[in-house]
Image (cartoon, rainbow, N blue to C red):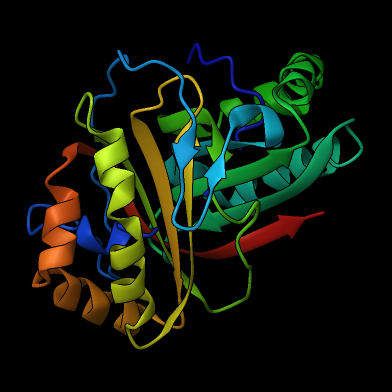
Length: 262
């Protein structure tokens, strides 16, 4: 695997609109729909969020998001190595917080989410980490890297984390030239999602290197609430309108809280 991964690091306003009948699911409701990621042709731009605009220069904090699957016969070993990874990045300059999410009991997907004070801090940490023996140890346990990128969060800099909560993770790509139209529809979409029973919070981030790609995270009280909301949102015009701007779904997962480092 030839990823220059900083730290196996992750984490939706529209995530509830993303599931389709074709998405493969495990017995506990975890779905995975990895797609082929393509190079963006959109220029870097100011992002118009739900309530305000965030020019990149005024919001230097970034998150590293990595979504991957662990080798089936290595998950017991993975738990200890992953904790070593979190311990290694904790004292690194610029580290803010890390949250790890995982699939259900029989699901081997992991999403790591690491907040850094700046992109330079993240890059420096990546170089330092590769000289630590935990780096080859964690990489040897990964079956497949489904998504990796650096993003700028458009609302909260870190999602909540609590045992028992269910998370919907969605990485998706907007059609070229339609990002502003897509974001303009977020206030109405957010209201529709926030009114669903069991909704706790949402977060949207935008890939720094490929600004037509977004990563969404929704936090729900239970899997039942998340599933019911998905079904309800699919029938809403506001959801269908927002999704008309999506070129493709790159990855969709249901996850649960795994661990937090701060």
